[in-house]
Image 1 (cartoon, helix red, strand yellow):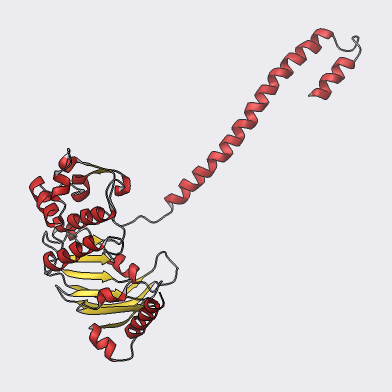
Image 2 (image 1 turned 180 degrees about the horizontal axis):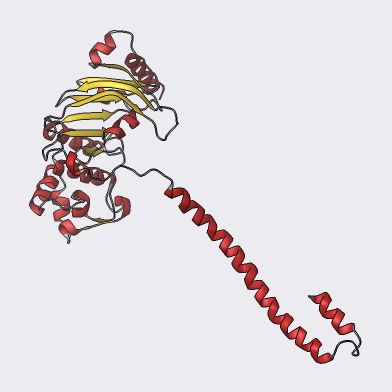
Length: 301
């Protein structure tokens, strides 16, 4: 454009009139802004087409199963006895990826206390994740609280009365703490429960499970991050209030499973051993090797 303008200016007036040169310059300046917006919009459209391409990819992803299958709903009191039966359980995280759990078959009787042990990456956490259902109780190692109130954290779906919530808090020894706050059950809980102590957060999670009256309870070293006093409270509650429940506990510290009815040893995604701790220690076993490794680490500290 600059070269064309210079060419027209340098031409003698007998060839091109001055007014035509001015008109050309005026149109040329406006054309510059039009050209800028044309290039800008083409770049903008090109960038947004990436989003369109991503949406198209999402439309090709197979749909998940329905959230609720009305013709296959379990009875309201399910599970009735807390029995757990697995037959050739195989799990992978995505299609065509290697199996994480490789054909696990086991039978857990109601009210049994089961410890799950294994080295890091053996698949014990994946096994417990497979079990997760809304009717089951879960107490993780790191207590999970959501932004809201005490009521919304203990009863997230709002299906229990205040009286039942207070009874649950009384069982887990938090009734006096919550009652002492100005807003009672509406007391604030910030994201992750940072305005409550670690012990209180764990007890609130325990109260949530007690309120559901779950027949099956999963523990992931629930007392690993709390003080000794809170540890004693949680252990007593689990021992007394969950005596008639099936308890499946992931153990990172071997001594925590020595009192279990049976111990499940997982290695490389397979159930290698499943028996009473005393019987496993009587013979050469993977569980015995894990106990020895733990003892050696403890002695070296």
